[in-house]
Length: 122
Image 1 (cartoon, one colour):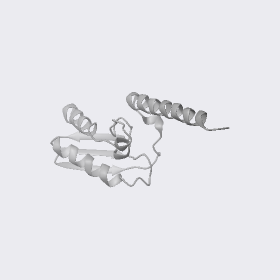
Image 2 (tube, rainbow, N blue to C red):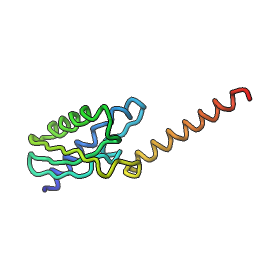
Image 3 (cartoon, rainbow, N blue to C red):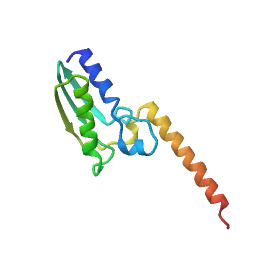
Image 4 (cartoon, one colour):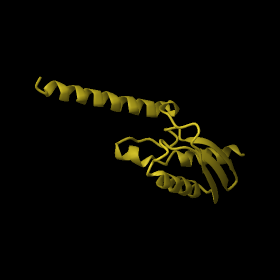
C-alpha cells in the first residue's frame, strides 16, 4: 500500500456525497459521515469496505456507483467495494464537520418547533 495512492483514494472518496443528505441541504461526504470503514490502495487497485446509514437505504446502489466512478476518475482501474453491516453505522462515526452540521440542523429544528408550538392556541 503506497501512501500517495492511499491519499488519492481518500481524496476521491471525500467527493462522494450521500444523496439523502444533499437533498436535506448538508454538504457532507461519505468520509465525513464515517461510512468508509477501510481502504487499501496500490498502483491502480483500490479495495474498500464501507457501510451505509441504514441497511434499507434505497440509495445504496447510487452511492456504490458514485464511489466506483470517483475512484476510477482518480486513476484506479480496479475498484473492489465490499459493503459491511456489522457494526451498524451510528452518529458516533461522524467527523467533526458532520457533527457541527448535524448539531446546527437540530438547533434550527428545535427553534422552529418551539416557535410553532408557541403560536398554537392553548
